[in-house]
Image 1 (cartoon, helix red, strand yellow):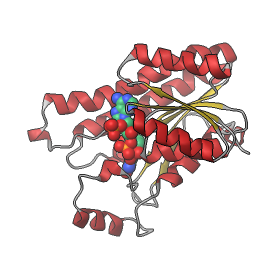
Image 2 (cartoon, protein in one colour; image 1 turned 90 degrees about the vertical axis):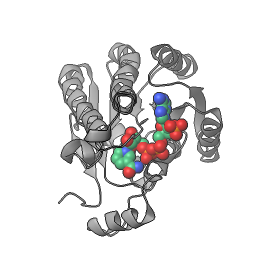
Image 3 (cartoon, protein in one colour; image 1 turned 120 degrees about the vertical axis):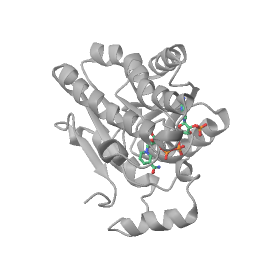
Image 4 (cartoon, protein in one colour; image 1 turned 45 degrees about the vertical axis):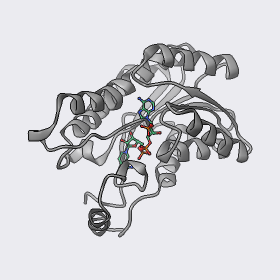
Length: 246
Ligand code: NAP
């Protein structure tokens, strides 16, 4: 098992990529703190992890709320004594063309996708520094690399995540802590729910592999990066998109 006895916190783990990541980590032997904002979804993910024979615990925390994140880290350390990996996965979209984008749409995406990543990492970094070890994994996006029509806010947040990852890779590398970003292409989760089927079809046609990605394909990448097999991968930005951007 690739992650035997490693302790991981995964945000936005109630569904989609976060849920698939929690299940994969549990299958690989990790102890998983399932963070999300909805108790029902947390319970679903915890049950799926336990069905894999894994040890998992749920915790409601909003990545915008530092107090709830500090309580989440405390609960993790109280139960398992350490934090080996943080997966900053929680994220939202609120799309509009620049000319129509409201301040609320801009701020909400920045608050969750960018400041939320900062908040969660701040909440765990002291523990990782004390341990002199840890892995900080972050969901960016191909949109953070190339921009996208109607996604000024989202592109800014995901590009910002890459900037923080590279900074943390420099600041924390000598302390035994690695930081990396994963840039998914179009992955079949509810985040694509607002996109009409016709447009999804067109997106699939643009992918050299001819299909959307599966949440499990991003989860597998996070699991590798969290493992000791990735011990020299730091500050990397890894695209997992079926070749969409080539
Ligand atoms: P998803 O299915 O919508 O899952 C995201 C999860 O995060 C949801 O359970 C969501 O809860 C939760 N969340 C939202 N706001 C939160 C907050 N303030 N605090 C804690 N949790 C919160 O999305 P996904 O497709 O799995 O995406 C996961 C990550 O990958 C995101 O960062 C996304 O930007 C990134 N990504 C996805 C794709 C894709 O095509 N799917 C592509 C590139 C990057 P609610 O549903 O209640 O909001």
